[in-house]
Image (tube, rainbow, N blue to C red; front, side, top):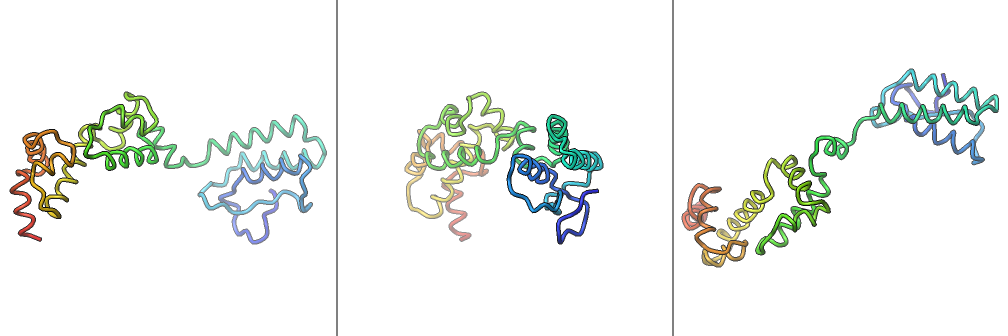
Length: 210
């Protein structure tokens, strides 16, 4: 068993990759404190692993015998492979594995929609904002939001329209154009589908409730 760093209270949650990096630094000639291999308690929930413990012991012995050339490199690679296999997946990796659009790409897309809400927005525009091909983007977006891109755009247009209906005295046709609809009739149809009533009645009802 390798000695723990001062202040450590548990042999669990070992950041094995830190050990490997410190050993690699020593082998390349970097300064060390000569106290042998030390390690600290990790904060990422990495469990104690007996396989890595054995590999670390073998590596320590190889270094002490000054027999840490090819053999030592092989042990280092085995430790890293085991550590990568054991470590928890990040949220981004889980999203990638699930086929969902990563959050940073989704944020870019939603920001683009909000900035261009009054304009015609195509699938190609959204895919370009995400940095993906159109078909690949559409599939990932639907997994991430449970909505098709066009459906998401319509919802955002109606949300913006509701805000304008309450806060402004703009006419319905003006609001329709401002949120990206080509006609008031189309705006009314889509608004009623999402809100359950017409824009005029929704405005009256919500202003009275305010």
